[in-house]
Image (cartoon, rainbow, N blue to C red; front, top):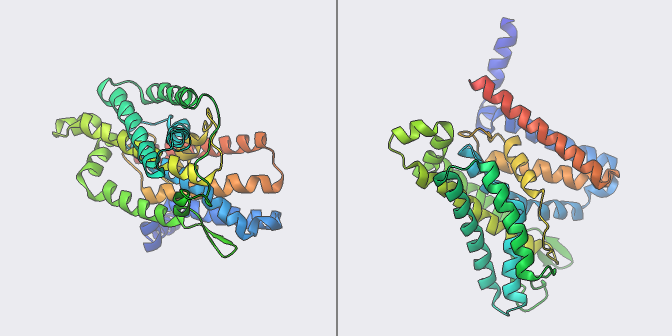
Length: 334
């Protein structure tokens, strides 16, 4: 018994485990194992084009996952980010393709739409004190319908890469010779670094964590709970807008009413990466690790012949496992 305890302490006190985090290290190992499994199961999975596909998927999922991490850190949630991302992208695309406005204007409006909805979510949750699940479920329905109304229910596209105003697509993928280079990874790394600093080294980040840890204690300590609680949802909205741009830069056609389910990918990634759905705990780096696990899983499943229905079942099981891990982790802390 004593020997097992010593081994456990030796593992948890290991410098690498402390630096990365025990759960994050396990997720990295699972991610590597999954990648090897898919490569062995399908020869085509290990090709460079598959890596590019994984990265394409990771851009917008990473952005919405970073955003929802801040909402989760307060003990809340945001179910509107999946359909919202598509809605804001549709609005920006409508301004560009139908009204002839510059791409830069469309990009700015896409982000502003996300921040506006984030402000609404923050108001509903922080000021009116509605349950986050109900509040963001309602706004999810609103943005789903709004995208269809503005576009008239018709699919549209942002400018193609070879068009004169298609320069924005090079932010995420460039063609060098005959090779497509996923340069969007640079923006992901920058976003993770910046938001990690904000969350752990700045007053807003510390207050957001404090709200999730104990909202009443934070209020009694003089923290303006409503202000910082709303900020968490505004940040979530901002990153949902960024995700809308990444989504438009990845796909040629945007369809109204889509995006449902992507919020679960982001939430699942954040929880797998160590963010607690009860609030007060999590890291942006952990969220990124969770995102890549989800991206590899969702990209690899079709390569082993699993149809979409089976993919949904497996993703659902992964989400259950992620929530179970969070429950067990919370009980252990208590």
